Amino acid sequence: MWRFRISRLVFTLLQKLLCRLVVLGRENIPTDRPFILAVNHLSTADIGIVFVGFPNQPWRYFAGEKWARHWLWGPLMSWLGVIFVNRGEVDRQALREALAALEQGCVFALAPEGTRSRIGAMQPAKDGAAYLASQSGAPILPVGLSNTDVLFAGVRRLRRVTVTMRIGPSFTLPDLGHRPRSRDLADYTCLIMTHIAALVEPRHRGVYGDTPALAALLAGEDPWPACVGAGEGYANANNAP
Image (cartoon, rainbow, N blue to C red; front, side, top):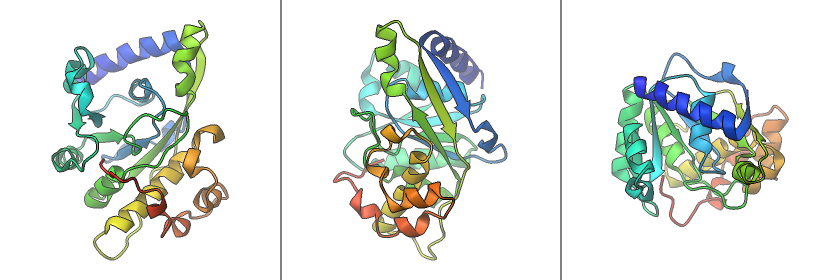
């Protein structure tokens, strides 16, 4: 636990130097069981922001294998318990490690999109979060980050951008009554991303913005019926975690 305390302290100091952080919805963080934290991905600063906004607790999370070779971030991420994944393929070993971490009581964090958005808006997600949740039964905690995409541009202009992190209520995936198939995982992913889209500023919603599922959720209705059959429309050619 001490390594997470040290990391959180360092990230907090950097955050206070670089930006203002507003965190909403901390009361939604589960305290009685492990969960899957699913967040949109706009900046390389996102994981540090999440560390600052959450309490000290055991963490594991995914990162691309390219970071394992970085002279600084590779050792640091390994020290923090990162599971490096091979992009462009289904990394089954990484998925097994993630499921084991949840079984051990760790919080598991990932960005379902799999990589940082270059346009400041949500892009079609992969099915890694849906697979982990369907296999483990762990609840999903949706988190929406806004304005991290302009954080470093603000730093270059000597301006501290206000970054907002909204934490939504946790939820579990609907019971299908059968083992989830590929199209079911795609629909689950649509549901997860819809919950995240509801927590970010409209300009960040991207492909999940103008959808019946999001309209239903924002109206206080169940978005799942609108996600059924819609997930395949977002599926990537390489749907790795």
